[in-house]
Image (tube, rainbow, N blue to C red; front, side):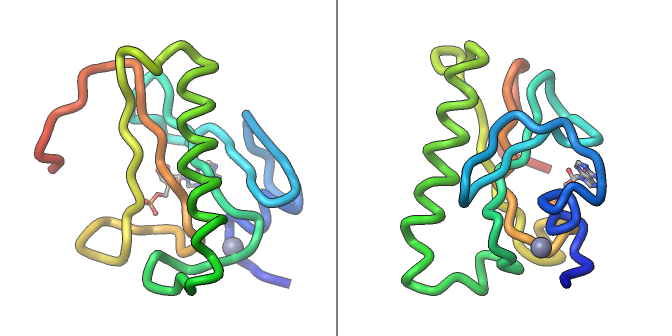
Length: 114
Ligand code: AMP
Ligand code: ZN
């Protein structure tokens, strides 16, 4: 079994504040939130990063994006706006190597990012 942190959250071996779950996708609040809403939307299948995506993963990545938008909408941020980010490898600051879409909302977010 995978020792990956997020796989362990999926298996409920590590607690998380879960905001959405279905057969393929899990979303939970980030443990170190950078905005009033900071959730991570992940596939239940372990995929290391965007670099590991295959063409057959296209629908799954679409689900992550649509789920992030749905969570933002449900929490009242669709109009104000929100940010979604996939960090990939060292220069982007990826620390957990199980694909996760960051969903940030509830404050003005600067651009370009740091
Ligand atoms: P990244 O740097 O893009 O790989 O993002 C990893 C994110 O996972 C960071 O924002 C962390 O705060 C978050 N994180 C790490 N451990 C946990 C955990 N146990 N529960 C929820 N979020 C976590
Ligand atoms: Zn994993």
